[in-house]
Amino acid sequence: MLAFDSSATPPTTELAVKKPSHGSESYLALVWRRLRRSWTGMAGLILVGLLILMAVFADFFAPMDPKATDVGFAPPQVMSFHDKDGNFVFQPRVYALSDSEELDPVTFQPIVGMDYDNPRLLGFFVKGAEYKLFGLIPADRHFFGSTDGQPVHFLGTDKFGRDVLSRAIIGSRISLMIALTVVFIVTLIGTTVGMVSGYFGGTFDIWLQRFVELVLAFPQLPLYLALTSLIPVTAPTNVFLAFVIVVMSALGWAQMSREVRGKTLALARIDYVRAAMAVGATDKRIIIQHIFPNVMSHVIVAVTLHIPSVVLLESFLGFLGFAVKPPLISWGLMLQDTATYSVIGSYPWILAPVGFVLVTVFAFNALGDGLRDAVDPY
Image (tube, rainbow, N blue to C red):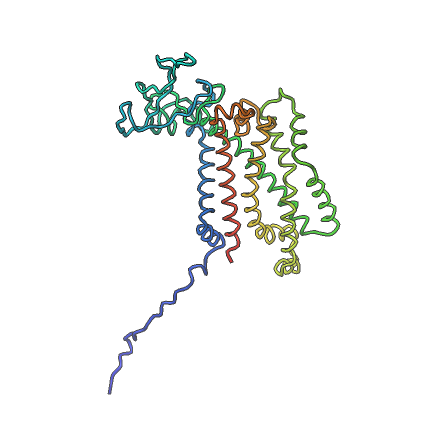
């Protein structure tokens, strides 16, 4: 007979069943996975992150003091890796313009050329103009600039001799702050009004939507100009800036509320919302815990697509002189120097803030387009 050892463990064959990796993923993980597949969405996310980083540490990234003056309408200085003899050098440098001893045979004016005898060496984390980081910490280090503290103008200067690049970097702080503040207020008011109106419905919804339509019916541009012109010229800059933010927010929340109301009307008829009503859940609990999480995906996409429109609006109003007043700096205020064609034709580098506006608009639009596809991963 064969004897079997009962204590011995019989050999077993384990079948490794590979489960789908996305079966246990959370909603945020699914959104992130879908967003990573969109190269435009990831490009927008990276650019938005860089823009916010530049705005937060604007004084550090600005190579010069934005209020310091030099030669008016000086052209951009091109970075070079060659010395005056044409030999390649590892340390980059720029050559300032200077008047030579030779005269123009027609105008008899000194010929302006590069001063190759006095190069301005460039480097990272150099000492420069003093500033206060976050308005509190004294510092004098800049991300990039001349090693000896001499002025460099990578995008030229304006009519007062102020560095265009430094002013554009500092101006990103005001422009993005206005855009983010306005969009936050618009989102808060528009989402609340839209959810409440769509959830309760009935007579309350009818009268509230008539008020929303009244706000949408206003011609926004003339109203912007009329309201901002009510502020006295002698008003403090903070008061003027706060008034502009309030005006933009008051005229921008209606469209957001209309979109959220449409989403809420569809969600209010879903089975789990009706089940919550049947078990006696309060309206506040249903709106906050059942409807609000489901409209957030649409709100996030709407926010990323609404920010570029506010940036463009601030730039346009600033160009007309109705957004930001000196000594504050914004992209729209800088564009006031481009009001005449002669200036644009003679000094095209004054249009540099337009490039910052275009990059910002592209970044948020690309991010919003990627999020629009990623927030519905099923």
